Each structure stands twice: as C-alpha cells, then as structure tokens.
Length: 332
Image (tube, rainbow, N blue to C red; front, side, top):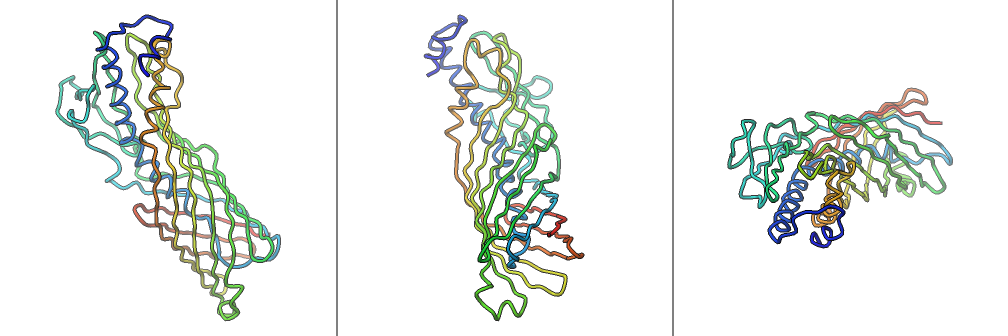
C-alpha cells in the first residue's frame, strides 16, 4: 500500500525497497505508540460517560420534566498515567533522553500523564526524524460539566438525554452526549411503593470523543501531520437501580454494565509530507488494527436531597476507576 501511495504522490522520493521498509517500520512504531498512549484515556472516558444517568428510579407523573446541571470529576489513577517503552519494542525508533543520548528504555506519560523529556528518533534514507514523546494532560482529576434532562412518559417510562460542549483539557479536549430510556418496575409491587422503595432499569447510548496533542515534528519532507490523536467511543449501557426514600432524602444503589466500541484516528491538520506520502491516511488505516470492544461492570452509590422543586445529588461510581458526580436539578 505504501508503494502505491508513493507512485501516485506529486513529489519524487527514493523509491528503493529499503525506503519503503523504513517508512513501513515508522508507521508500525507510530501505531504501537498510539495505542499505548491513548487507551487509558478512552477507558476512563467510559466511566465518565456512565455516571449520573439515572437521578432516581421512582416513577414520575406523566410529562414531568427534570433539568439538571452536572459536574463530573474523574480521578486519574497513578497506574494509568505512564507506560514503559523499550528500544526492543520498536523497529524504527530509538529512544533518546534530553541530552540526545540513546537509552535502552524510558517511562513516558499516557494521555492522562504528565510531561516527559524523551525523544523518538529514526531515519528514512539519510533524513533524520526526531519526535518529542507526547505529554499528557498532567491533571490528577479531570472535571467537565454537562446538561441532562428527562421527561416522564406513559406507563412508567422516561426518556433521558445528556450533552456536554467540547471541554478543553490541558493538551486536549473531551465531549460526551447521548440518550436513554428508563422504566420503573416498583409500580408493579404495591408493597414496595408503600415502603418508599423504588426499582427501575435503564438502557442508554452515549458517544464519547476525546482528543490529545500527539507526535509532531518537522523533517526534510515537511510537517508529518500527526499532531492530534482522537479516540471515539460508542457505549451501550444497561443499569438497574434501587432506592429508598426517607422524607426529602433518597439513597440509591445501581449496578451498571456497558459495552464500548473504541476507534482511534489522527485528526490534526494535514501535514506537508502529505504532498509526498499520505501518512495520516495510512496511519488511520493501520489504527484499525487496535480498534476494540470492551465490557465494564460499575457500581454506583448516590444520595439525593429535595429543596422544594430543586434537588441536589451526589454520586460515586467505582470499579477499575473512581468517578464522582455532583448535580443540581429542577423538576417541573
């Protein structure tokens, strides 16, 4: 495929077998690094999007509307802030430190990590390619606000929707939006209703988009155009919740399972090297090899207190990660 791309390129480039092999190794190493760098962030995005879908499992009156402003705080675990790279992992790159000395291995940040002073160095023909290993967001917590609303329908059904604008992170951005449908089951058991115990299930779909600054440098071929990497996650979530009411306070516990499809792509501006080699296109094709599907099982505990038609709610989700959510809601 690389050879075909070069034949149709507008500028001349040494088309020796060795050159093709060097470019191929560069693309393989960039794909490997991409997966290790962004995967912890997309895994965390699933937890962020899973929180706060159900404000209460109780049955609401027909056409009751709830609008809420949510603030989500995700705690970045230390284990997902960095990963180890070794020269033996690469077929093209060699690792260098800040003093331009070759080193056998290095600990570098994931997209959720901090800063680094390591470089990835290689050569195509006689032209050196030197890239600074990408930094992470350098945040121990990631906060983002979003809006959520719901409307009660017939027979205990309720439609829910959430939306966040694109939230700026250090060296990146994050966005989530989706919709769901809830159904109340405690309506079928009068004994539960009398005890102020509520049961409900929810099915929801959300899209999470998360982007980070990535590898970029200038070479004799021009800018490489791989300065931004994006993870796109489609998540189906099934949730079962139970709550108990004590006057104006409601305590809720939930069991959540979700299925997430992960896709990765380079989304930065087109590089100058694209006049010679369509690097971004080829890498995006290669990134298909690390597309994946994952299942998560999450517990959530939530407390909700009523002030007239205003409700204040906090929740904590836990599993592989810990995620918290605080919201203020208005019911009318």
